[in-house]
Length: 307
Image (cartoon, rainbow, N blue to C red):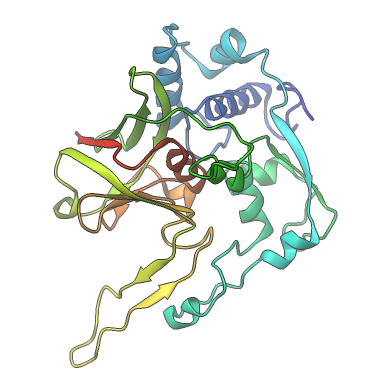
């Protein structure tokens, strides 16, 4: 395991501190989405939420945040060896909807995609962490360094499986969706912040759900997806297809259905796209954040959509 200061040498020391702060914030539940060593709007918001919840002054820079708050954090990274099972799990993803519906699952297409998601990092950051890896020819036994996070399976198993050995997280009593900040926040019954997750919202304002109160009705881990084409030529019959579950399923690894027909909070196979107005209407999260929110929210959780 590596300490917070044993960072990759391809970036400056200041950038290394930025990367460490992003990892620490993510581990505390305040996600900047994809960790990349670059400080921006999502990272700043994560730091502000973290400090506000703990009644701390907000440091002026990520370097100051590292020095004053996170310098003693340990075990930020881990090494993982690429296994035969990792290679065997890769999926050659077809473009035709009918062919997609025939897949056993919609898993990762590349090892780079797989390990980037395991470490909550951008693919470029993963490359910089592992400059000696030939990503076009990854082999069994290759040793890859990534930030140290629980696996997606561990995240999803926290709830509702009573037999899980992972301690159950506190229940969320309130989930807020901010349309202007592109953020979802979760709180317990005392108002304590449980999580901050950057999200994407509908591209078209006409497809945004109305502001106000909704309820979580249908949490599903590893959901499938019903594909409906946006356009059908005149005279042709609409053909729908059921895509199987998997990290590259259009709704990712978790679906949290709301009591508004057709709307929900869900994961995505493209985490680096999160934080914009680009969805068809639902609220998109990175897969790891969708799994975390799934683990927090029992059926009936209040969801407040606000500006």
